[in-house]
Amino acid sequence: MRMKTCKLLLIFMLLLSVSAYGQSNFYYHSISIEEIEKSLPSKPISIGLDVDDTALFSNPGFHYGFNNTDGPGGTNKYGPKPLKNDQFWQDMSAEFDKFSIPKESARQIIEMHKKRGDKVYFITARPPVKNEILSAILKRSFKLPENSPKAIFSGRTSKGVFIKKHGISLYYGDSDSDISEANEVGIRAIRFMRSPLSSNKGKYHPGMHGEAVLQNSEN
Image (cartoon, rainbow, N blue to C red):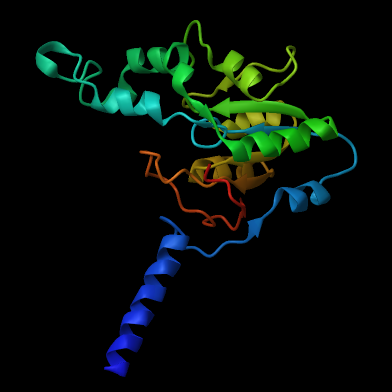
């Protein structure tokens, strides 16, 4: 009986260890905002953040995009592959972002950089659209100066191109490509954790590139 109990406890501990790393099979170093601040140069720098699942919990818009039945005969109005539908992206960045929620972890990291006088950029892999409201929402949500840069819509272009172009020396993101594309241009990247409520489950392996992971950055 005692042996059976021990085995059950061992299985439970293994399950806990797996869940602690989410979808990642990689061990990683967790880093606090205070540790990041201490690692930065004394002079102000330019920093960048990804948007979806990093700065904003934008799942409401994506959830609608994938699950609506507003098309003909109760079908999805964006078709079987919403992410390949230009109208979805137009609606997402020009309307649905009204329902996106700023992540508290992003608010805290941005506050630290604002106090240092750092310049804040947002780079999203979404395609460019007309009449986007994302830039205004980001400025308002994180109380950024009115003359702050507008959100950069990188589309199919590597974010590394824009990271290098704007002299960004530290980049935050949740996806594997956020980390790899910053690393490819020699820039330090720190991983944000995704909310467990996010429907975005792909390309997410914290620690995959040896990057540090921001503590408590799920929300």
